[in-house]
Image 1 (cartoon, rainbow, N blue to C red):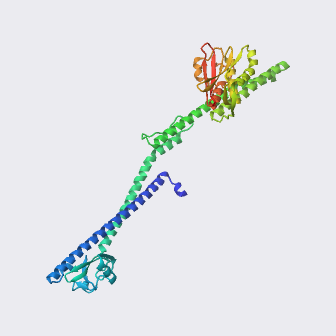
Image 2 (spheres, rainbow, N blue to C red):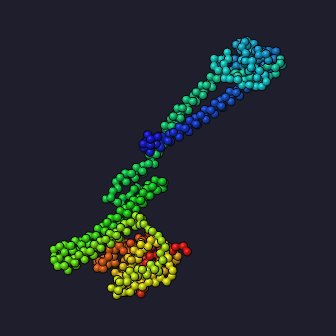
Image 3 (tube, rainbow, N blue to C red):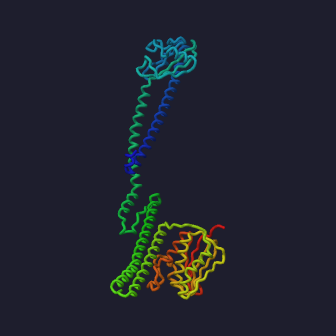
Length: 461
């Protein structure tokens, strides 16, 4: 019902509780009424049987004594009795209304001659109200007869009516009280929800550390508050990471844009000679390349943050893969007068996105050439069922305090940026490794130098 759904929860729960209570009270009332009615009928039937036995005994004693059975057949408003012969005519009493009109019809008399029979409610001339009759065959000294006893049912009717009224009034009062108690209980149970709603309405971006109140009871609402607070904490952390990301990205973009603008202004104002123009344009192109590289790095990091880094997995044989990287950096190694070597004797193979994996290894090798020294070694190894790809050098290594944050965004071992870089290279390495189900690590070598590696799941044999 659409109208019911628009009601407050307290009203809906109270209505449901009231409906269930009403059904229970109605069922209980019917049970009590029918049970009492059955018990009352049983008592009436038992009294009629007892009265019939007393009448039969009194008539038998009177016949033996040769006197009328007046004492046993006293008529009154509460009960009456009659003794019928087998022909249906009253044998006793000899006088009064009961002496002239038989209480039983012929068919009822026929049944009563065979066995004891209860009849009614029925109408008789002796009573203005419906009566219940009991007829029982009895053998007396003067011959077989049928003893009939009866009782008006007006007291039964009044008693049941009083019980019905009591059940209706009491049930209605109990329903009202139960509904009020249910409403108060639901309101008390939902009070923490209202407190959470008010606190949630007060929480804003200006107060990101505010949390919802948690009740003392260890119930479902307390667990809901804890779950929502944990969600708010995750949202706050995500917003904080997003804010830091935007701050760092704007900071990183500001420098190359400023340099790019400066070079163009120099070329516009002072670049009268072709050599000066070429130098300014070359510097502007270099800054544009750096901007493009930074934009690509920011895109990779942003996609990895929301787990939308797409991978196209394929088998990658590591020896030729590492040899290709060595050839790619051979000219740079020659310009820096440094060597680059590959150590991948085993026939290692991984399931990976070749383009993403190449991007991670390029960042690791570039980091080794930019910040390291000596020979750069590309090495593949299998350890504990996983494949490790190492890039090591013989330079000064990482500062010890930097190792714990080496893979964070925009983190640099050289805060002055004298060696260039955006601080995103190793962060991208870590994101790519995690997207493949692996991890990235960094350590200083015992003999000097840095070792950066990623571990990837080993494909099944």
